[in-house]
Image (cartoon, rainbow, N blue to C red; front, side, top):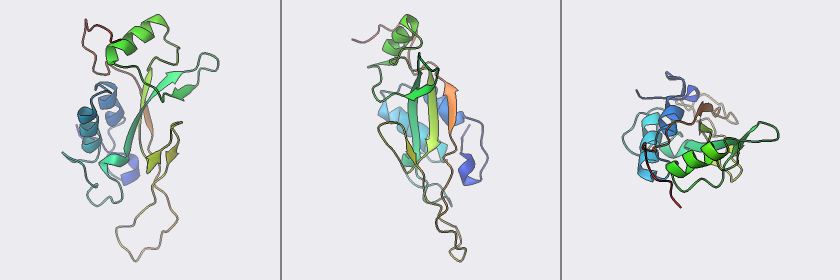
Amino acid sequence: MRPIFKATGQRNERGVVAIEAANVDYTDTTAIQKVQANAIFRNSSGPLALGAPVTADNVTIDYLSISKATWDLQHMSTLPKCPAGNRSNCMTDPDSASCIRFVRARVCASMDGGGGCTLLPYQPVFPFLKLSGMMLPSAETIVPAGSLGATPGAIPCT
């Protein structure tokens, strides 16, 4: 069950990275780093084999809420303190800015505070091909939030 993005030309098991991230505790950085490493067929941080410049750090995972006014997906710069707290927020008001409703995974050089993705420059495997200026697509996948690592009966954090 190892995912990869379309941008690398490899097999893409539709949304597997986002699905894994939707079911992992977003406060557990080790678990998130493992999801990112799995996305590029690695057990630890490092580059994708024959896929430079893509590294595990380029697999960005962010969390989205739904705007009450426009029903658009919005990047959440401030997340609930814990998954149980998110579940409580969503039960109170599923369309609030503090309810994680979707998880997005994509390949980015960097991501700004508003959720904007800076694309990675393409690096050819064979240097005699001059493809400067080409950028890798972000290969964005969005899935509904799963458990986010919450366990049944967990007390919401304060």
